[in-house]
Amino acid sequence: MARIGVEQSLTNVSEALRGRGHEVVELKQESDVQGCDACVITGLDSNVMGMTDASIQGSVIEANGLTAEEVCSHVENRLG
Image (tube, rainbow, N blue to C red; front, side):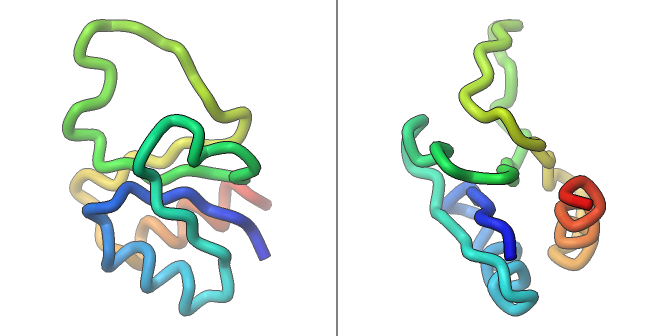
């Protein structure tokens, strides 16, 4: 299965992804995204200054307003 980075505050999303067999990495700092196929962020503080310095080559899913199951579906759809 995929290696997914998840922001610390999204514990329900982490548990749901683990339940589907994915490896979940807690994102505490920028270097934690290394080796991740996708990342899930809250989106609450995304791009405040208008800068786009992406540290990941994979998909980034913004969880704001989505249920844990919806986030899992988005992750799996993007990973193919």
